[in-house]
Structures are given as C-alpha cells and as structure tokens.
Image (cartoon, rainbow, N blue to C red):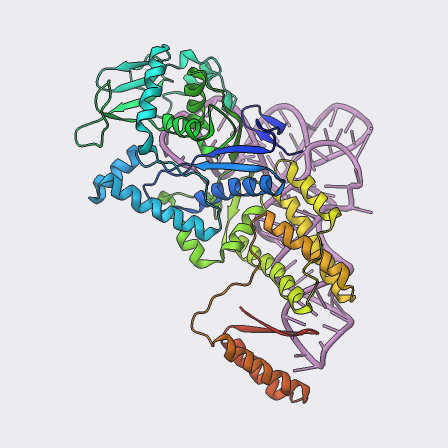
Length: 460
RNA sequence: GCGCCGGUGCCCGAGCGGACUAAGGGAGUGGCCUGCAAAGCCAUGAUUCACGGGUUCAAAUCCCGUCCGGCGCUCCA
C-alpha cells in the first residue's frame, strides 16, 4: 500500500483515496513574473514523480496545477518593464510551460489561471464574511480572521500564540488588522493597478484564496492530495486551510511538500548571483540527467545541485543508456515480462514515502544483472531484466533513448558507411585503417562500441 | 531573536536502535574481456557516520550541548 509523509499529520500515513482507484491532486504552480528556475523544476518533478508512480500503481490520477497570473510581483515587474500585467504573465507562463515540457514533466490535466476565477473567489470571500470569519477594512480590502480557526499553524506544527510572537519579527504588522496573523482575502487596488469590481470596491484577490477556488472547483470540496514546495507550507498553504475550513469545506485530505534545492552549497537567489534558470541548465546538460540527479535524492531532503553532482548523474544516465544500446544490439526478446521480484522490491521502496533513491537502486541492480546475464550468454534472463529496466524507468519518467543531438556532424548514413568500412578493415586485420576511422569519428563526437551483435555508435 | 530540518567515503546520496560486514550512482585503482579500445563483469575503497558528552546488552540511528548549513516567522517552488 502506498504510504507517504503527510505534512499536516506530521507522520507517514497509509494512503487510501477518497474514491477507490482514483486520486485527485492539486499542486501549486508558479507565479509567472520571471523565468522558471531550477527550484521550480525540482518541485514540479517531485509531483510528476508521485503522479507517475500512482499511475504505475494502477490509480487513475486527476492532476491540477495552476498558474498564478495576478500578484504583487507581477504588478511590480510589469510596471518596471513597461509591459502590461497580462502580457508579462503570458510571456512567463509560456516560458514555464516550454521548460517543463523540455524537462519531461507531464502536463497537468487542468492548468487553471487565477484571473479566470475571480468571480468564484469573490463569492467565497462573501461567504466567509457572512460567516463572520472575515472582515473588511475600509480602503484596504477584506481580511481573514484567524481567531475563527483554532488549528491555525498546525501545518508547520506551531500554535497561533507562537506564531504571534514571531509576527512582526521581520516585517511590520499592519495596525489595522484585528490580529497580526490575519491575512488578506481581497486587496483593494491602488491607482493604476489592475482591478476587478467587488462589493468592497475595486481590487484583486489574495494569493491563498486563488488556490482554494481553483482546487475546489476542479476537484471538488474534498480531494486527496495538495502539494507544493516546502516554502509554501506557511503561510500560503496554512492560509488555504484556514479559508477552506472556515467555509466548512473538507479540502485537502493530505498535504505533501517537496524540499528545496541549493546551488553549490547555497540557497539559490538572484542576490547571491547563483540564480540558475531552467532554460540555461537544460541547455548545459541533458534533461534526463537532471531528472536522474533529482530522483537520486529523496523528495523531502534538501538537495545539492553542483557541476560535480550533475556530471555524476550524466555518468549514471550513460550507464543506463549503454545497457539499452547493448540490449538492442543483442536483439533481446521484446515480449519478455518484467521480473516480479525486482518489481516488488521497487514497489516496496516507492510505497514507502516515494523512496526514489531506493527505487533507482533496484533499477541499477537490475542493469548489472542484465549485463552479467548477457555476458554469460543467458539471453532469457537478460530479456527479463531488460523488460524490468524499461518498466521501472518508465514508471520514473526516465527517458533512456539516446540523445538525438545532430548539430554539425555527419549524417547517420555517412556514419554507418564509415562504420561498415571499419568493420571490413577489422575483418581484414587492417587495424591501422580501422583505428584511423575510429579516430576520425571520435573527432566528430562519435564513439564506437564493438559488440558481438555488431558495432554501435553514439554521440559523446 | 524564535521555530523546524539537516551535517554519512574523493563527490552526489540512501539508511534513522540490532542481518551496517553503511544501498545505489559518479570518479579512482587492479584484474578479466577486447587486435587495441569502448561498453560490460569482478575486485578495491568510510573499523566509521560534524564535534563533545549521555542513555542502552546494542547508536549513523535516541537524549543534551557546541559548531556549521538550509528553511519558515516576508514574496518565493
């Protein structure tokens, strides 16, 4: 049975979906005010991995991930660059979608935009006001009253009093609020800002209400899993809980948070000069290598991104691909079925809080067994191992087909011709010619591997 | 300042009281295979898990303290 760490319960829980065989998930997407960075990729990967695993496990998954396309940051950025807010948001949303596609993140079943849900949000705010869980402040907007939510803070294991002590430690508290913990549901617009009409005057929705409106609209008042980056647990997710429960919605049954990522030992931030856009990183490495690197770290552990780590993952990916090439050259039985023992070990690892490092270990153990089997001429065992590797790699979303970079080198036909010439030379024991051809290809970034099934070439 | 989470071999990174003789990957070294390579296989690699105490028959795993890093209390994936 699938089990995972539920942030709110603060323990590993056995997962039973609301509806047998089906899972509903909502994952907070980005606020589109800048290019997506590597951190976005890690969080997206975490939930992509969970989604794919649940599917592999036989669940039908409905996956929703939003785009926050109206927010203070977008407003500030737009005014700084001269673009309108919708233009800016559209531009960066496109960048986000492109890079996630490139990274191999499956698209969500629904990708709602906050600006499409303003009506629903206003209804929601009105409902909270009617229930006495929220109050307007003239000229500022509408605020949620944390008093109405006794469990406030439970998502990060703190009490309201503890949180009040900390409030104001780093930012000045608005004196108009009834409680320093109260937060905006609706923000009154300042002159020149984008605004929607409401009974409290022109304004825009608060961040937290957006996700509540979109999630419950698409998944229902109660759904299985709400995910997001660890940094969103407080205040964003906590405030979502307060709002939803303030309106008597069941809301998320489970909360999952993905850990952050450091670059070369430091938090990634523009101020530290180590801000790495996903686009730049994906230019510099192969997407599956980055995926493999991330899967080698448990999703709840802060991970390290460094050139060394990336190079290591590239090597690991190459090991997997080398097996795939070898298996194809050997013409192994494509109809073989995966080894139940390995599959069971993989599932046991993944069922335990999505332990991808342990799951990957099963994959690599299987590759070793596959190679050994082929070395020993046991094609039956090799075919079974191969089917296992393919099945598990697919479950993890790892693409093992060779990279198809094509830039500036000879066409495949020309390469094959040279390889054939070299094979002739080798047959004639003319190793000088054979080695000359191999060196020539190496100069073009082509490496050769001689196998019993023939010579294989690949990009290096 | 307050709270939470970490510090494991050359690097990344699992493990979180007893089959740890510390998974897996990368890099290194030796061997086998190969015309030579590449790929692969085998072997090798931390007597030790930041440091100092403590609990226990037993600790990388639990407790206390110190140092270091991250996150949250502010917008953040």
